[in-house]
Image (cartoon, rainbow, N blue to C red; front, side, top):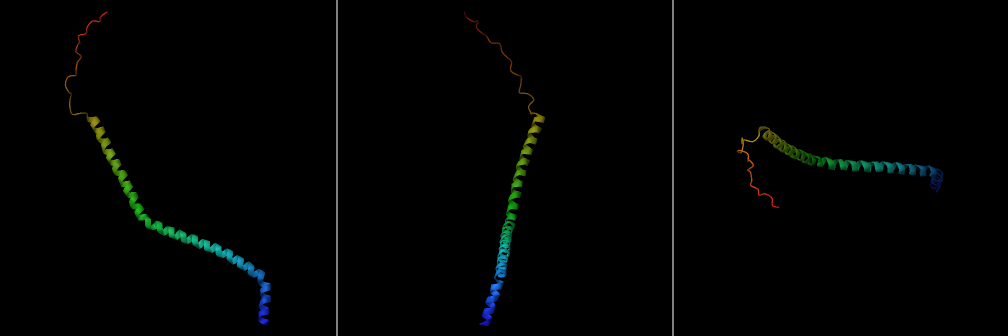
Amino acid sequence: MEILRSVWILAEVERPLLTVLLLVGLVIGCAVGSAYARARRGWNDYQTVKKSVPGARRGAWSLIRGVVVKAAVIGVLLFGAVAYAAVGSDEESAGPAPTQSPTQSEPPHR
């Protein structure tokens, strides 16, 4: 009985201190818990992105390869057009140019 009474008295004296310690522990626990959850989400996101990088890299290189091939084809066509325009056609001339032939016109009637 004496022990129970001394615990009760100790609890009465220590109650404000225990309340403050409990509140401080709750605040620190919430801060640490939210930081842990944020770190865990970040790690999971990192692992997901890390696994998707090789596929994305292959896709990027295939897109770049397509653009380079199209640019090369356009360059070859432009080079051919410029070379053709610079050399001219193979035919010297198609023949004499047509001339105007005089036409017989009727005099105007009055």
